Length: 82
Image: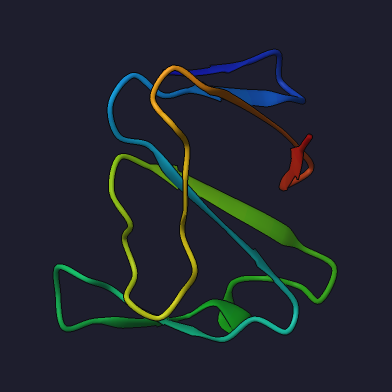
């Protein structure tokens, strides 16, 4: 489940939920389910911090963190808040 007040996205994991944060210098990401590579440097600025939340990791060459079932994760401006 994803919930947001417009500034703070909050994710709750019931079974499978993963997140990955990208920041400068942005590079290329290889998708797991297709033979496609995305160059994030073409779509971001050096000041961006981008977090993707998904039910399964989407890329092969990036680090994905698992949210434990029953756990909440709070994000602000792309960064996970502890």
